[in-house]
Image 1 (cartoon, one colour):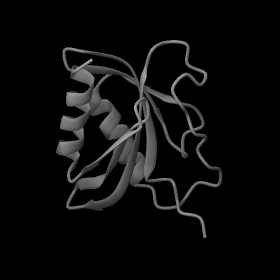
Image 2 (cartoon, one colour):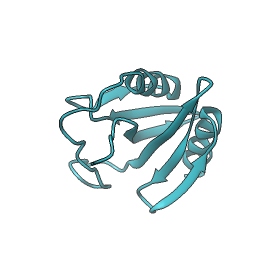
Image 3 (cartoon, helix red, strand yellow):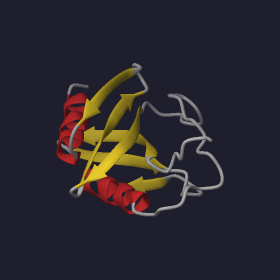
Image 4 (cartoon, one colour):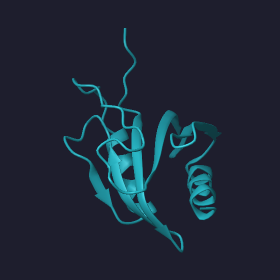
Length: 120
């Protein structure tokens, strides 16, 4: 039995300036990448997708830095392992440098993304 990948998304960050994130979200339920213009918009979009119960029929293609992207971007894989008490627990994988960190809440995920992107 293959695991359901509906609790996993790829976030492609095009720009991050003064705490404002702009990029795309890729998820198995989406036919195309969904653009977002803020961190809160990305989180709400992902939360709505996580709320759907059944696994998609087709797997999400993997995106590596440089694949079909011509600009300099940061690529993150967000794996939501648990959703309890209106928050998330899971893993954030920064694909550009193959670095993985565990988060225990949605707030911690936001802080991790901010720290990584603000350092660049």
